Length: 366
Image (cartoon, rainbow, N blue to C red; front, side, top):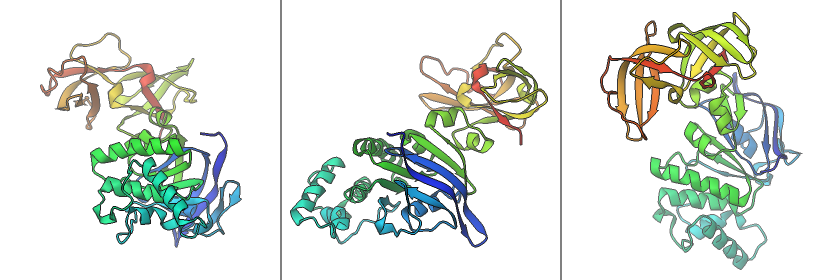
């Protein structure tokens, strides 16, 4: 992946009547990057992808691909190709015909096109499938053929609109890894749209989280999960427990916080400037919490509760703990490797939660 940008989206908005589907988006996407647009339905991610493809025109702003303004350029003249959610495989054509479809006006001879098709089939791990009918393909095979058809023209950017959405869970997870490996091998910039957080974190170099037409945060998977900057991002990426808090004091990179039912919290501020008296949100992931059946030492970052429902899932257990003064239970996730799950099914027994100072994420109050 290069540090050079291949896509620049500058102050782009798209309105459909009175509704702004995309609202003043600014993004830079790097050459050779696997970049995901992530968000719930209606957040504007597919509209943004369609503007990159040329199927929609911005109401305001401009899009540049390889330093060329493209808003006035029709889709077939842009250096991009697109893979749709339904794959758009032509049922009357065999695999060779589907993959070669876009090469008909390339100026290459039939033998040269067939050689390219064979290269694509080897790349997508379907050698020998050229003569197979489209209706004989499984879901995963159809997805591979759609990818090969998009890549055979060697676009500078490949756009993917939730292409794994129709696959079952196991095949979807397998194709995530294959798609990531394929992108690395061809070195083309992929712009991937999904509403699935785990999918985006698994495959992407960077992720842009969108809501209501705006980009809220752009970050690598680890930075996005460990360091969300808004409550929406923290809540949308994985599971998070939230508590309203007030900063007592903050110095030397550590804040002392009153967090209601969570008690007295000490947390690293991680560069955020939360002064004494600031109203903030204290957020903590379920896996960052330690659960014990005996009271740990200390008074900061320790709270007593009562064990609620629990589920043993083999490699891990999901538990809920009720705290005095809080109606919503606290979610806790425990790995079962090297430990006993004995006791987690004994609801209503007293338990203690504790956590490290760097486990807390501090967010601006709402």
